Length: 509
Image (cartoon, rainbow, N blue to C red; front, top):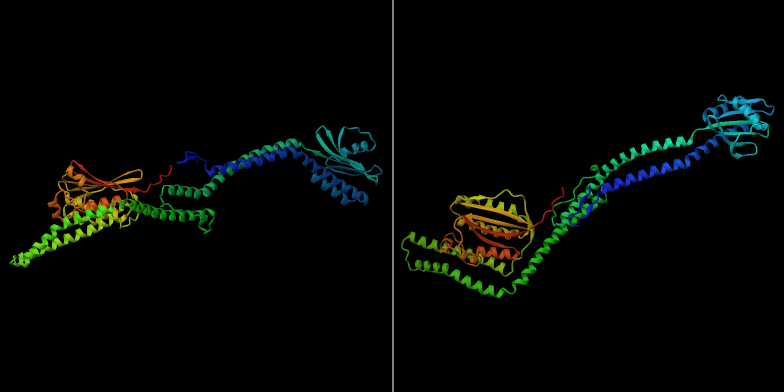
């Protein structure tokens, strides 16, 4: 089938059609060659065979004359067999002009002609082909056609004449040629169909390898060569070996590209982080000092209260202890998240770029967070997407989605709906997490990604938020050189981020 190469725009001429046409042209050429040989050489070959046949009969007569056995039954039986087998008419006369043998297929008609040749009484116009010491071979024309004729007088005095008809060799050659044309055309058609069917089986694995190579160009390494050939006999050929090598090349390329993307991200991060290190250190120390003031002050105050015996009863002391434990837990979580953020911002954490199914990751996280959403009676909506492969750090991508999702759970109200959507465009996918509820004040949107910024500080502290989650999202996305953001909607808020997709090869119909 003739198609078109998507990348070069050039036409593709199928190998199976090329082989089919080559086979048909070769067969037609062979038939044409046979027709030419028939036309040029068949008549000569036919005449040569006739001359050989009549000469063999002459040798039999000469041998009989030498041995004086031409009057025996064996001699007559031998000549009768020659006459019947080779369609030769014979007449043999001895030295006394007595007929010794005459064939039953018209030999008596040659007797007068033989005497005419011997005594020079016949002056017939003939085409002499060969002359020996005791014979002449010629072509004579009669009313019913041409004949190959041989006559002569042997040294023993025995005279002979023999004749065989020359059928219309040209007519026979034309008939043979017409028959060969019909048979050749039928054979070419049947052979063309057979070679096409055979080439379908031969080129099928080649087409498969071509499809795999085009997918590899688009950095899709899922397709593998696994065709079962040779009727399950376990025999392998060069195409199978090529398929195995393509599979190995695909695996090596996927591994190399993964390593290259990881190294490329590391290089870009190294170039960017040097100018930010000093400023980040100063900001980090200032932010940590500010955030730790409140929980430390609370722990110190309640601890001093316990020390001074302000809590007189067990319930009061338990309350003081609960406050201390709660604040210590919040401070511990804050420190852990700050350490994570510190590693990201200072470039100490390696971003491992790998290829994974984003849809599966999101579905698994939503399943694990089902208890949290059920407690708040939140409905989570997500269309049933096909698998979507991306290049990213799988663990950090889950961290980004988890921050967005937990943030949506804490701020979700009114209709209590969280909607997850994926929007694809060439080379990229945008993941959006929407929750119904109050919009983010416009003046706060640019500040959301700063460490420790809280729109509603009272509510954030109520559920244990530290104001670091969105800063972690920012650091992760920037470490992978991807985008992120937030948008207000009429009935809620959308937080989104982007990732690089694995471009899938669309097979030509």
